[in-house]
Image (tube, rainbow, N blue to C red; front, side):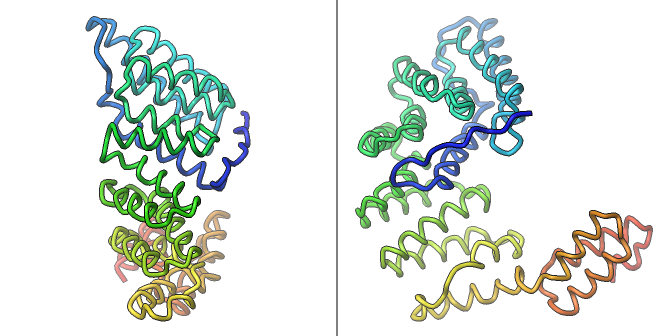
Length: 321
């Protein structure tokens, strides 16, 4: 088992956000993959063979090419399958896009750049190719050009609007950045707290640092709205580190955040209960979960944990309490 290569941050963008943008692009490919965009040019039998190689490469990619659980051997197998798919069908766009990310995650930056430029040569109207190339480009002027091209080709391209908004904000073009990011939030379906929620919070924090508190609150409020229905423990963690002092003029926003905070604070008994369950000390864990509810009844996890334990012990009557 190998570990993923540590990357140098791009100028003007944090390493964390760099990884997040790469992940967002990969998730977008994953969500659309089995639609398999291709400018058709091969016969049906070859097409089916290319798609089969692509699907194998796609599955191997998610098993071995992502930072969590990176496995060099599996990732190299994914690359081999994706290369074969392109060899058979040179216009299978999704294979190019995923292969570029696999190359990048393996440390083959030049190959990543080359495969994306090859896709652009094959399909000059592919907005995703320009967006993906922008992720792997260090020159900020060139990144901006590539993102603008992606948006020109696809005015509702969600990732490009978000990335351009972040880039503009870091360059001090705040009004243009806000416009781009608003478009990003309008055209992008909310996927997960881990990806979209954290990116929105990051952008709002940058607005806050730029002194644009009203627009920052607009983004924070949007995050609260988009995460309605998600576990309050997760929603709370998005806002737990946010200093509310600068937002004294925004009473309603402060009230909403303060109402969430009990769901991820004062969790000493919860943390002990989790550790005890991992050690197989179920009865001790039950006592800690019960103490958690007594001292801070807000975290839903405690109730779910007790229900799960009682059911596993054949005590459905206690699970209903």
